[in-house]
Length: 286
Ligand SMILES: Cc1cc2nc3c(=O)[nH]c(=O)nc-3n(C[C@H](O)[C@H](O)[C@H](O)COP(=O)(O)OP(=O)(O)OC[C@H]3O[C@@H](n4cnc5c(N)ncnc54)[C@H](O)[C@@H]3O)c2cc1C
Image (tube, rainbow, N blue to C red; front, top):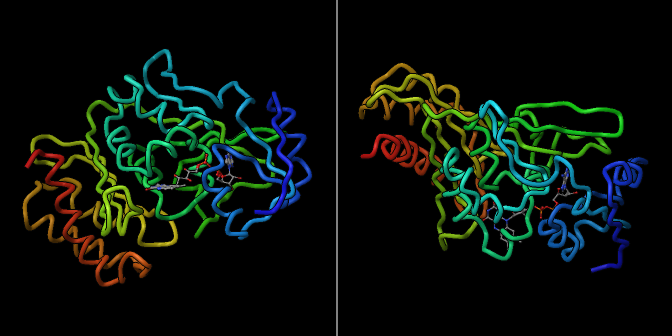
């Protein structure tokens, strides 16, 4: 790995100043777990990393709004903090279950929520889960801030819509007690491996009737993607085998799945049909 400078600003304003000139050799750092791998492989050769570890404010911790409508997770919150939070377990149990399948305990103690999203690897486990929970992100820069749905962050393989100098300050997740969620990570090697396919589902159910739902596919395209046609097959339907079959076929038809080192496109299409149905079944407890 080549030498580089590490800056550790104590305030957000200092961080903005260090990142301000838009130099591609200067990058913000969350936990550094993705950056270090890219630097060791010399895919990325930074002159300086700007750690966000000490900037504080809304970048840190977990809180719930006074009216209990939203949970706010700071961009520098680690996966381990989320995994161990009773508040997240109570309101977003699918997020905690997803954490337990992600990487390993050493990575989860340093990787940050903001760094995870900004990395934009389409195989990441959490982004599809945030998307089915209808989460947004607050993006801050020296000149202002904006809030966008998580799905609008992704622009392609490892590409985001973040402008130079913009930072992910927090993830904002609505609390929806009437919705139930799950994430299916299909791995072909070990349980903690990267997924060959990921399917995240959130649904508002009344018995077996699907009032509303969100379905997101990951590890199969250049970014996590809503399966809108499959959602339309299930919304307003009873969850029976015929509806699930129609939804599986609609899902396979609406996306152009890519092959990768964990499976061919044809194999992933098969996984999608099978695991979409299993994910929906698991929501109704069968
Ligand atoms: C051994 C190993 C196994 C793994 N297994 C899995 C797995 O099974 N499933 C999975 O989903 N992931 C897995 N990961 C990936 C892991 O989730 C990511 O490395 C991690 O989420 C990145 O977070 P970070 O804070 O370390 O990001 P960093 O490495 O610090 O940063 C990643 C990118 O985000 C930018 N950035 C960082 N913070 C911000 C911010 N707040 N605002 C804007 N840009 C920012 C950086 O400049 C960089 O481009 C694994 C990683 C390792 C090392």
